[in-house]
Image (cartoon, rainbow, N blue to C red):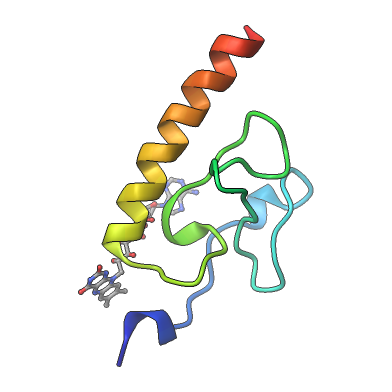
Length: 76
Ligand SMILES: Cc1cc2nc3c(=O)[nH]c(=O)nc-3n(C[C@H](O)[C@H](O)[C@H](O)COP(=O)(O)OP(=O)(O)OC[C@H]3O[C@@H](n4cnc5c(N)ncnc54)[C@H](O)[C@@H]3O)c2cc1C
């Protein structure tokens, strides 16, 4: 079975009310891995996205890291 068909419950209950989650409790992000709350970023399987694999998680992490650095530079 392809991994994109596996269904899991992300451990995001503690984020409820802090960031927007989709109907399956995955974190909604934009293309910069920013959640709906400025300064909060998400990467990997916890993010709402169509393909949850190592390759996409690594790419998410690279983007999230750069985005977080930029956010800090611009806001602090
Ligand atoms: C059985 C199986 C087989 C797979 N095979 C493949 C494959 O062949 N190829 C492929 O590309 N992908 C495969 N995948 C998918 C791949 O494992 C994931 O896409 C990848 O691991 C996602 O990385 P991640 O860092 O986002 O999440 P994870 O690897 O799940 O890491 C998240 C970590 O956060 C920890 N955590 C959770 N909640 C908290 C908390 N509140 N505080 C602190 N830590 C917390 C977890 O314990 C975990 O260690 C497979 C997945 C499964 C389940």
